[in-house]
Amino acid sequence: MPLKEICYNTVIHNTEDSFMLATVRLNDELTELLTSLTERFHKKKSDVIREAIRFYAKELEKNQNTRMQKAMKKTAKSDFVEYKKLEETLNDGL
Image (cartoon, rainbow, N blue to C red; front, side):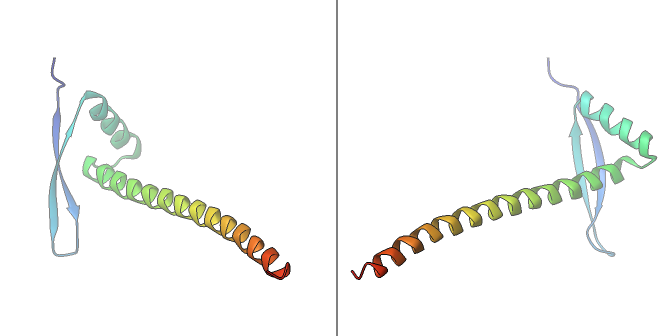
C-alpha cells in the first residue's frame, strides 16, 4: 500500500528581493510531527520547515568540524611519534 503523502509549498527566503519555492512531500508521521510542532510553538509550517533546514545544516557543519578535529589530533599524534623516532635516530649518531 503506497504511503499517503501530503505536499507543502514552502517559500524559502534567499535574499530580501528573491525567494525560492520548495515542495515538500511528507508521509503521515511527518505530517503529524510538523502539525504538532506548529501548534506547540505557534509558528507557520513554512517557518518550522525553514528552521529545520537551518538546524540540519548547522548540525552537519558541527559534525564535519568534529570529524576534522579528530583527524587532526590523530595526525598530530602520529606525526609526534615519527618525530620522536627521527630524533632518537639523530641522537644515536646515525
